[in-house]
Length: 358
Image 1 (tube, rainbow, N blue to C red):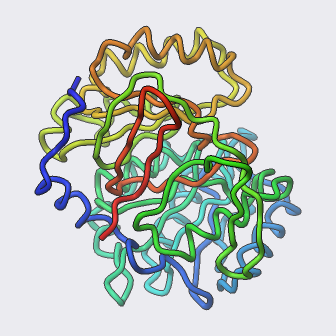
Image 2 (spheres, rainbow, N blue to C red):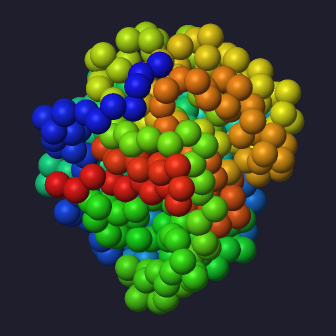
């Protein structure tokens, strides 16, 4: 584990220099985006709703050829691995695509990785104007976030997905995601705000929306700077030993300081315990300068989850923050990965984390 000492300004500058979208927007009206289903299938109503949502933001939507496919044997896969992989590669390599947007999670994204030519993907990682393309999604899409970080070294957006219920049921999620797609990231605070329901403003239509109040609290105080990584606990644990997570004990030496995020859904406490044991024994936390916990929707009580985390990491000498909200919370905030951030976790008062500016 690493102590949460303040890193040098030179290291902080090196981190910030690789972060995209600090003073430019990831997307703008008229951009072409590719909508794909790399994991589980969805129904026609959800697909059409997702397309309508993206088009309402002024985006041109190109749907994957196999987005309506179904695996011939198992119900939890949206088409065969070959079909889903073909849509993913075709979407990313499309020279007109500004972003690749995952329709939903579920299961199956990790099955695609071994058949991807990442040299080819790297050749197509930039748009004609030199900005990186953007991959968006969460949950099972954690597998793709890890691969994009390891093989392509591009930032991605861990956010609610347009084919899922939050885009239908939440009064917060569509507008909040829009701000990450259509506004610069530099200096932006992550998670929910403090105060009496801070009023947000959706970038594309100017509509006001009330963001949920922050529940974030400090478990271990401290300050840290680093690149954001992590995602869904089950997917991170499943990736241990893979090419994307090889040499995790030496990761900090290679890549610099990091702040690791974790969340999950529908897992009993003993399952969370087992997954954390896997990460601890595999050295995943050895690269961490801080750990930030998101939502634990339909898992054990949050007090039990926090106690479990403290059992494993409480003496690690790094800041630990709980309930930042990202993940499967019905109103989950978006979180960019692969960008430089600062975390302040005071012993008293609300912890804060924000994207470092240009």
